[in-house]
Every structure is written in C-alpha cells, then in structure tokens.
Image (cartoon, rainbow, N blue to C red; front, side, top):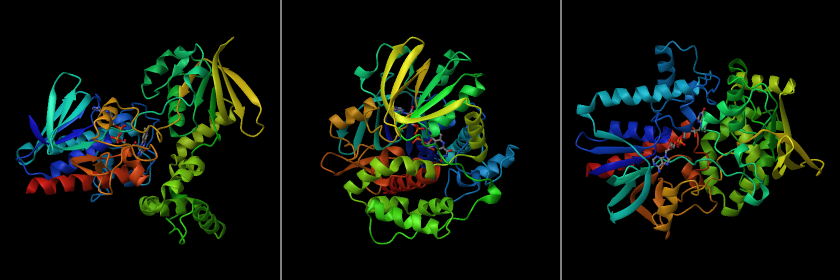
Length: 453
Ligand SMILES: Cc1cc2nc3c(=O)[nH]c(=O)nc-3n(C[C@H](O)[C@H](O)[C@H](O)COP(=O)(O)OP(=O)(O)OC[C@H]3O[C@@H](n4cnc5c(N)ncnc54)[C@H](O)[C@@H]3O)c2cc1C
C-alpha cells in the first residue's frame, strides 16, 4: 500500500510525530508507523518497569504537546499520582501517559487520518520515484510512502576499546544495558564494573539494587564526573539570561558564563537560561568550534545540563558513602580474563599510574552521543544508496534547519525527514522531550502543508 506518511521508529519521537499528524492531517490521508518495539511509543527511555527510574525533567515540562504545557500534569492528577508540576514522575508512568494520549486520538478515527501500526523492523529502503520511498521490512513485507519521518533513536555507543584489547571475557560484557534481561544473570554479591558515569550508569545502579544486587559497583569513566542534581523544588532558582558576548570561541563563551556565576548568578538558573538559545548557539559555531566543544566540553556540559532528580541523587550519594559504589577516573586500557573474573586495567587520570581491579560483569554505559549511523543497518544501507549522509561530526544524519534529510550532495531529499537525537549534528540539544516535541510538531506541520495541496 502507498501511504501518505510512514513514521519509522517506535519511541517518543515517533509517537510525538504521530500525535501531531493525527491533529493536522485530513481524514482522507493514511499513516503507517513501523516499529520493532513491543511497547510502542515508549522506546528505550519509557518502557522501564522500575519505579525508581525517574524522569530527569520536571513533570510540568514533559507534555507531549507544546501548546498544552499542563497535559502531563493533568494526566498525573487524573491517575492519582502524587507528583506536582515541579516533581519528577516515574518514566514508566510517562510511557503510559503517551500510550493513553495516542489511544484517545485513535478512538476518534472516523474524523482522523487512518493509522496502521506495523510491528516490524525496516531493514532496507529504496527510492521508487522522486516522490516515493519503499521500505523493506524484516517480516518480508514492503511499504511505500510519499513522506517519511525517520525516528530511529541513536542506539548505544560501542565499548571504548578495540577488539584486540578485550581477551576471552566476552561472556562477562554487557554491551547493551537497555536489554534489562542481563540483570537476572547477576549474582547478588558479584562485582560490577560500569563503564561511563552518566545517566545510564545511574539507571543501571538503581536497577541492580532493585534486583537485589548487594555487591560492589565500580564505575570507571575518563573524568569520573557524575550528573549534578536538581535542587528540591522550594530551592530552585529561576532561569538566568546568559550574557553571550560576540565571540563564539568556546573558551570565550565559557569565560563569560563563569563570570556571571562569580557575579552571583545561580549556575543551574544559568544552564536553564541557556536552554532556549542552545540550538541557535550551536548553529552559529563553526565545525572546528563544535569539534572542540565535543572534545573538551561535552562531559562538563552533560553533567550540568542533564541533571537528575534530587531523590535519585541522594540514593546514589548514600551508595557512595557506604562504599558500595566507587568512582574511578581514568582511561580504560584492557579487559582480560583474570584470576577472579575479568581484570579491568586503566590509566588513572590524576596519577597516570596503571591500575586494575577484578569484576564479574562489565557494563557498557558510555552513552549515545557518538553512535552516529553505525548502529543502524537501515541507515547504513540508506547511506550506501546516497539517500542520507552522516553529519560532519558523526553525531547522526545530515539535516537542514527544517529537519529535512540531506543527501550526498547536501540536497534535501523530497519528503524525507528525521526527528530526535539523530539530528544532533544540526540542533545539538535534541534528545529530551521539551526539544523533540517542538521538532515533531514542525515536521508534522510541514508534511500536512504538502498534503493539503
Ligand atoms: C534511559 C533514558 C532516560 C531518559 N529520560 C529522559 C527524561 O526524563 N526526560 C526527557 O526529556 N528525556 C529523557 N531521555 C531522552 C530520550 O532520549 C527522549 O526523551 C526520547 O525518548 C527519545 O526517543 P526517540 O524515539 O528519539 O528514540 P528511542 O527511544 O531510542 O526510540 C527509537 C525506536 O526506534 C526503533 N527502531 C530503530 N530502528 C528501527 C528500524 N530500522 N525499524 C523499526 N524501528 C526501529 C527502536 O526499536 C526504538 O524503539 C531519556 C533517555 C534515556 C535513554
């Protein structure tokens, strides 16, 4: 069947695009949503069943529709959840909210576009004509569409170690911790080594504890930096407008912001003040400036910008105080079979000394920023056909400021869009709901515009 729109993916980006399309498209049009995720609309982030997995954005900023900012808070009230607009709901509840909002739109189907949900993985894509793309699915079917929105997420980064430096311990390595089945294989007193000290690490530590793990958790990352916490609601400072000056050199921007903090601005308020201008600021940087930011500023940006709920931070602090979680800053050198499990060796950041420890499990929580297109066979195949191009810093796809996917000659591919973190090369901050929901709406509006003709 030829659809007017195919949304490929089944996480938040896909659901946000679909909800907006349902609001905007006439009843005569058709949408296919192709996703391989059993919990459609939840993706990696919101299918968790652990109540300890909290949102890291206050509920009041998590509405899926930007023009109804209280939508999620109202859902929480309707469902008797004790979370206020400035509180942090569970991510599982957020997944249920998304599912409810989509379901209520689908109930009014006679007034809305037709939607077919296709549970499959898109494995291949060909261009039938300038105005039609054909997706080949892993269930053997094919699906054609005039407009396509790629909402594939960005997968997991690879282990930060060449294959030759990992010896005979493959069975001890958890490469994708989002497949939570690994937790049930872990013995209660086994030692865990988590590579990476960001939000994914925090999630895995909490999940391990809920699963009854009581052994040591050694966290190794290059700088040993952990995400900062949001303060309790009654101590939150209002957003502060950043004074950015004229220079776009990263060092000059940073010096200006540091001065504002020295002059009394609350740093969290300043980070919140940067939020509305971050995408514009990123677009003003040259390729070299962006690369410099990624090399030197990324780890610092992440811990200040993507903060965790105060109650989660207290739990992690307590585990650190009790010696259950230890943080090691250094460069991973090798992982070898040792006398007691795997022997993890690293060069300590401060002393430059070679250190090592034993671990029964090694869990890759090194993040997603650099996953590029390598994680997706579909994107690799589309790249080979010249339908898409990787962005110049390897953050995802090359897209223009309207989220239209650019081909090899940097020309927009007719009717082909991307939404979500895949577009980080153009927008940088496009991983969280408050940013993606705006992008989803503008892509849906652009498609609706062409279908009204
Ligand atoms: C653990 C975690 C917690 C987070 N917490 C928050 C938070 O509190 N607040 C916030 O604002 N943001 C949060 N985020 C950011 C989060 O990335 C976004 O909110 C959002 O979930 C991203 O959705 P997505 O659809 O772009 O990607 P994903 O959620 O990764 O979904 C992509 C989907 O596409 C499917 N897919 C991939 N390839 C194919 C294919 N070839 N064919 C078919 N389907 C395919 C995948 O199976 C997957 O289901 C969190 C992220 C993570 C990982």
